[in-house]
Amino acid sequence: MYKFKLPKRKKPLWSAFKTLVKPFYKVDEIINLAGDIPDKFIAVSNHSAKSGPVALDMYFPKPTAKWGAHEMLEGYGERFKYLRDVFYIKKQGMGKFGATLKSAVEAFFSPFPYGGMNFIPSYPDARLKRTLDCSMQLLDANIGVLVFPEDSNEGYKEEPTSFFGGFVMLAEIYFKKTGEDVPIIPTYYHKKKKKIIIGEPQYVQKIKSAGIKTRDQIAEYFRKLVNGLFQKYVKNT
Image (tube, rainbow, N blue to C red; front, side):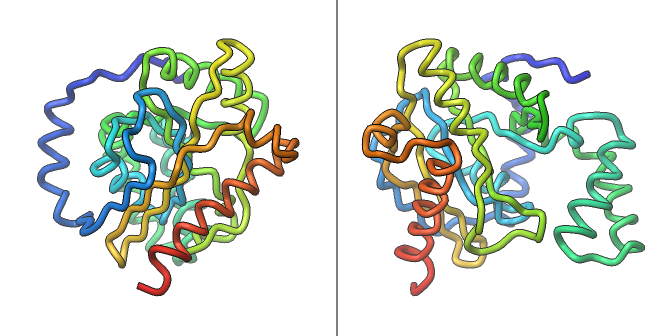
């Protein structure tokens, strides 16, 4: 079973690797509407297939730990099956032969980038409590948590059509525990336009006081904010 440890601040091997691959994830423009981002925050972003997590790890102004599919943090067999059956065949529409070849190789090397980018496993069931517990420890240590909440069961879309509400639950539980209404920062990354837009921080308790009450409603509120960043700063540029 995955054992959580707070990420190390310095990772020389990962830093060297990022330097080598950075030209493949070049970002020409970062629009930061958030200003001075605090150390303790939750960010929510579109996934942009494989590119989003890597680009945001490289260019987001503050270090983050990220939620990722729990299968990718388990054994080789689980990683291989997830990559082949879910990521490449289901989400990317790839044929089984090509997906099998790519997954066999990537499943072998994937622990290195997943560890380098400080991924923690997210679960679609009651085990989500593990994800929340890890995330609470990260926030307590003033490490930002980056979540990719879009429903990608039908593939990754330029404008996500649905957000899962796990990140809202995290903010609610953290507020209940500490009394802190942690800022949630909507973010959008576009690979072709080579842009990252960081939106203004939002606060779940303030959103609730404005009449948006349920977890699903709040998740939808953030989905519209993320898509709004795309529409305003990316779509027609």
